[in-house]
Image (cartoon, rainbow, N blue to C red; front, top):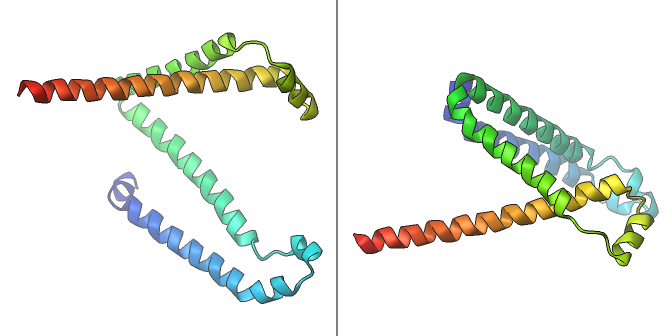
Length: 159
């Protein structure tokens, strides 16, 4: 199965996407006149879009399971090669906790919004940690990009 998907996976995914999209469009276009004839306040009772919603949910779950499954397969089949990936995940988790520790106190406006939307202090800390961690990762990505371009420029200048 792995060899088949490695060779034909994109074709299978594209074909499945085309078939699901065609089925969704056929269902919607076949019932759009009845949907539009329905009173506007009753349109939320319609089932015309359910197939598309269920397809998106199902494909999201399938993609998640496939990503985790193939990741585990690669990790178990090549443990030495997986060390870099595991270290990267560990770095991201460490950056999250660093971001959570670096997050300052919320301003009065933020506190009012947290109260309005019933966000607890622990949820706020997770949100702050995620935002600061993402900013740190974005900064590191920018530095890596600039550093890589500089190294490429220096290498091309030498030759």
